[in-house]
Image 1 (cartoon, rainbow, N blue to C red):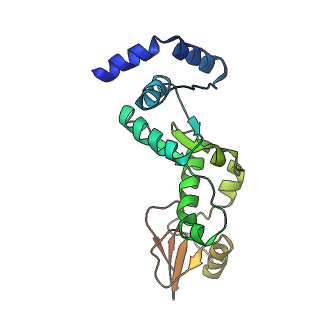
Image 2 (cartoon, rainbow, N blue to C red; image 1 turned 90 degrees about the horizontal axis):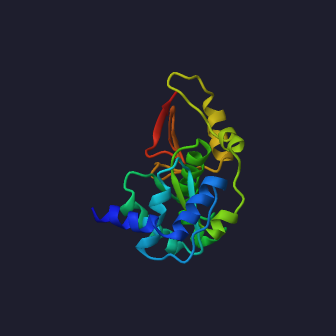
Length: 196
């Protein structure tokens, strides 16, 4: 297969051997001067080791290129993007909940030690990230059959920044109709219904 021949040729390069030695020694390395599809092929040599892995680039366009290339070379790997936190502005409001949800998914995977590849920009990498304790402390955990005070739950949702709407259709929203509360969590794929 051509991918195996490319990997074999890359593995024979002294620069690649140097990066592999550095990774074994310190678990950190830098690979520069490699562009195009070759960088993802080179990275695929190292990604056989247990992750998580972090790749930092200078621009968001490079992150998207890396995503395409790594998905082509390593379709079985979980590749996620850590987006920069958006600054408060009118344009940012529409996408801020989606960006927050994506950031939460990446951070959760990292804190749980999942084998994942994280792609990010220098800007996002340098932003302050809350630790695992603050993440788990901010969650509202509900289970089937659990007794919870409805009004306290609604107050907690508002406190956490959820938006009350007539009908839930996006992450970070909730609606109330009598004893029925619909909530679309930031890290959920679908809204959930709670009944009192």
